[in-house]
Image 1: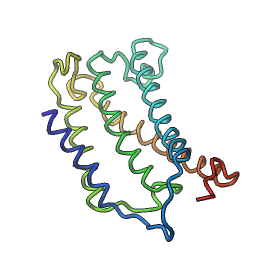
Image 2: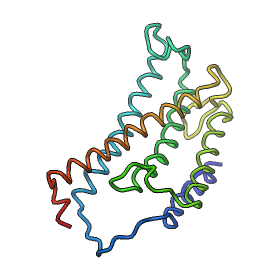
Image 3: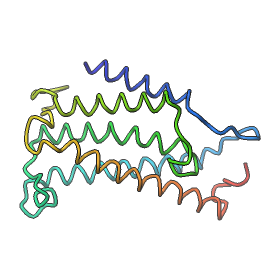
Image 4: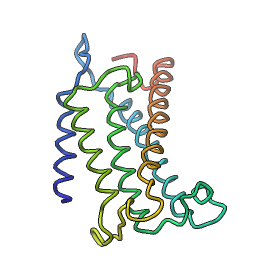
Length: 191
């Protein structure tokens, strides 16, 4: 089953090659420091949001914690493992949609139907698996399907959380590009 998920994710990433893009009027010149900086911004937000979610999940047993006050306290270790799997699955695909638009917001360029379809299929499968996965171990890690224990709405909470951080990630990407273009940071305007 994990092999099927891997193949589906790989197939979705291959569909990026069929995405709609606006071609440059001039030959492209790679500015690797700019690419590294933007990649670091995108990855940094994804990492930071993962660490926050992990902390909130681990802290869910304390009566003063944010999750406990929201009514989603007392998460088991297996649920936390599954929450992190789902978070990484969702945020990786959302990062793809943010990265593909270069210096604009993700909604400025519609993805190709094959890319959108592949992402929807992979994200749906990841969400379904995270909800119905049987209690047990996967690669020596204890997991519990999110639909097996309360709060059963945890998958929806993770989705909302990822979407909020996707907007933050995309906004930081655009702000970083504008800042670099305004002051010609790393020679972004030279190529």
